Length: 197
Image 1 (spheres, rainbow, N blue to C red):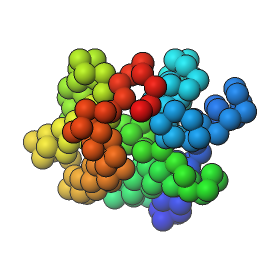
Image 2 (spheres, helix red, strand yellow; image 1 turned 135 degrees about the vertical axis):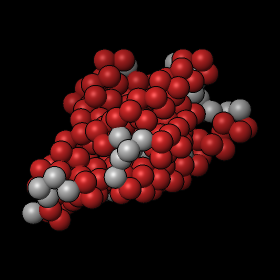
Image 3 (cartoon, helix red, strand yellow; image 1 turned 180 degrees about the vertical axis):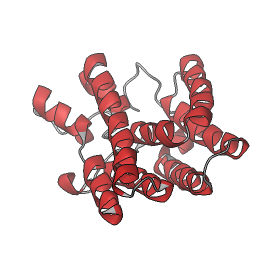
């Protein structure tokens, strides 16, 4: 049952709410519009604020639910809570239902981290939101959130498996954002409210 929770976490994460929103609202594949990313930020660009907020919350909920499924089905083992949560992020990034073309997993990762390491995630999240507010770069805020959570985590009393999970998710996030990082360095990254360049 514990190992099954990892599979369930992946299948749950693989539900692409941004894709579904595009199909329901405008009969379009959101991956063919805007930045081409199946996530909340591109949903904002293509469909507007309401759908973007809904996608953000639902993607976060996937991560939260996956962690609790792993925790419950393993009898409270933090290892499987972390693995099921990580599996939901992988599912979001490479969804089996949608040709393995997904998003970058930020919102789902937020749900996972807020569930397993709430306090460092909260502190890093405040800094990330401030960064997005000032610079209007969502990608920069996302990377600051991941980096900040990873750096702060050792100062809190959480199971070691959570640190390694967060570290792995941070590395994955940087890899998924590699084109954004190049655009941030070159000054061509799109800001909130702008069309993807």
